[in-house]
Image 1 (cartoon, one colour):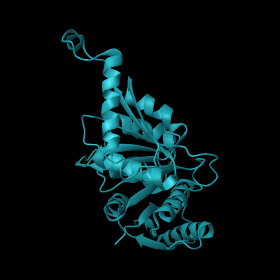
Image 2 (cartoon, rainbow, N blue to C red; image 1 turned 45 degrees about the vertical axis):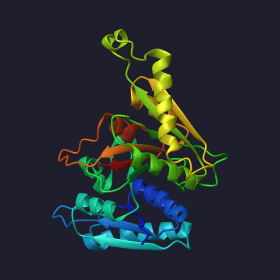
Image 3 (cartoon, helix red, strand yellow; image 1 turned 90 degrees about the horizontal axis):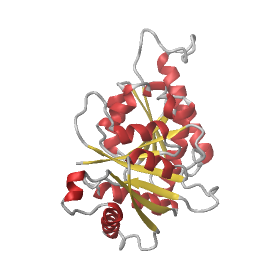
Length: 290
């Protein structure tokens, strides 16, 4: 059975952008879209809840507004809405494990909004059960992933770290590029070799860069037979990975990063992922690996 694409909604512009992006992703994958709203009763509801409306009714109205928004854009898309009364982290993490993709909204450098305030989204990303994409409101592709409005195919950018398993990350990036008719750009950033390494005759300078790019090409070649028509570029450069990836993300459809499946109760996302979630101008996909 094909897994759906799920979007977490909370009534904010950011979550509507996530729902919009998720709807087009579901259309591209030819799978249903699930819209999920998690809420808990509180003796002190937020100011967003009208004084003459119960919290349960407000939650229902929030979800219904998201459903109507998506169906107006994609009337033929199968949309399933679900309202749950449980902690948002729990609901989103469970949805991540049951979906092909979980899509959440973000304000970027301003932080997260609605029930994604502060550590909630970071906790979900810290222990992902499946791929998660974060979309910010106002992004030029918020109206839909792979939109026909693009004048020409752009790139799906994926960050590669040779010190960690990357098969699942690369496979996800290849498929996302195929769905969009976009090119794929594999990027690896590495630190300069130590003086000791240089003294031992190990590759450095142009030789080291050529060696790293050769390894990137080998990684891509594993999936070339499955995606023979996909244009793939492999770039290795010396320096910190976050700035390099953020520069590439300026013209990207999607930035793909990896995240180890592990128990992180404090919600640490790692410096590269943290920088991407707060500063990347395009949607960011976080793909878990073992």
